Image 1 (cartoon, rainbow, N blue to C red):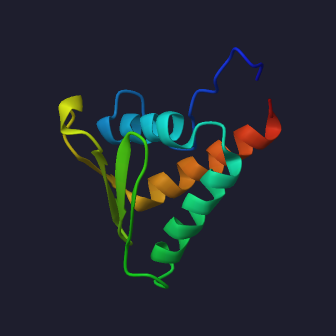
Image 2 (cartoon, rainbow, N blue to C red; image 1 turned 45 degrees about the vertical axis):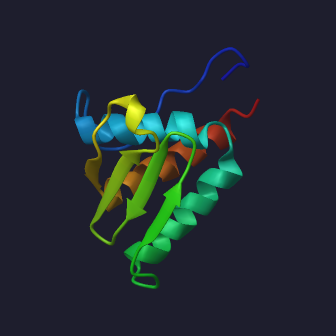
Image 3 (cartoon, rainbow, N blue to C red; image 1 turned 30 degrees about the vertical axis):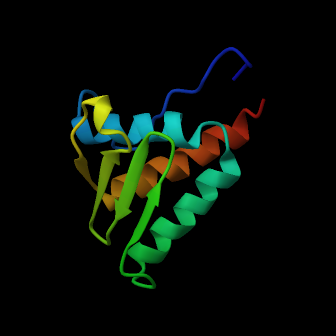
Length: 110
């Protein structure tokens, strides 16, 4: 990836034109960006919930609020003016996407 090219989110099982997967991708680009350490921190929190260490985890980021549960995660816009509705995704899809995003960032650092 060059400085002018931003990576496109992709992960095993990602479906084109799926509202949940599109929202995960938007969250990766807009809230995680190229910050692999931040992505790893988010992944750590998601993992803690999936493993039952924490019952849930919520974080407001730049564009979206994640409300992570063991099975599903709600990704809601931070600002109502955005005109977006909250979307519920499978937490394991979010986890897979974060793993793939981190790998992609580490393979092609700026």
